[in-house]
Every structure is written in C-alpha cells, then in structure tokens.
Length: 73
Image (tube, rainbow, N blue to C red):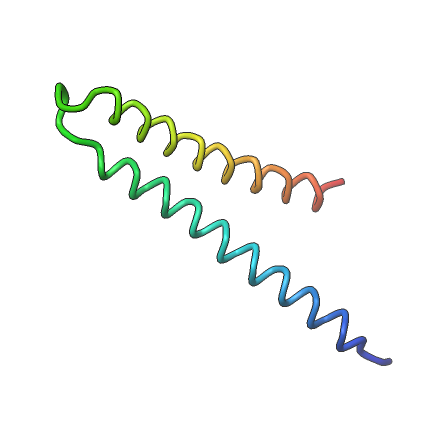
C-alpha cells in the first residue's frame, strides 16, 4: 500500500483554506450584526449592514449544503 503524499497535501491545503474562509465569512456576518446601531440611527446604513450579514450567513449555509450534497451523492 502506497500513500500519494502530493494528493494528501492537496486535500489538506484545500480543506484548510476552505475552513478558514468559511469561518472568516461567518465571523464577518456576526461582526456585521453586532455593528448595527440602535433603531432610528442611520437606518440606511443599518439596513445595508444587516443585509450584508444575512448574505454572509446565506453563503455559509450554501457551502455547508453543497458539502453535504457532495458527501451524500
């Protein structure tokens, strides 16, 4: 039995990069939600920040759903 170290390194590198990217995207969404001001102050900016946070969460959910699809299929 031989181990293809190049393929193992590639899988490790890609999984590390995607994990860090996904966690960073989720963190960006949490930070965006925490930066919202009180109601009534800068409503346009708060709406943009909130929608940006929801986009981050939707991208995270899409990435997780795609991962589950790849595993199950």
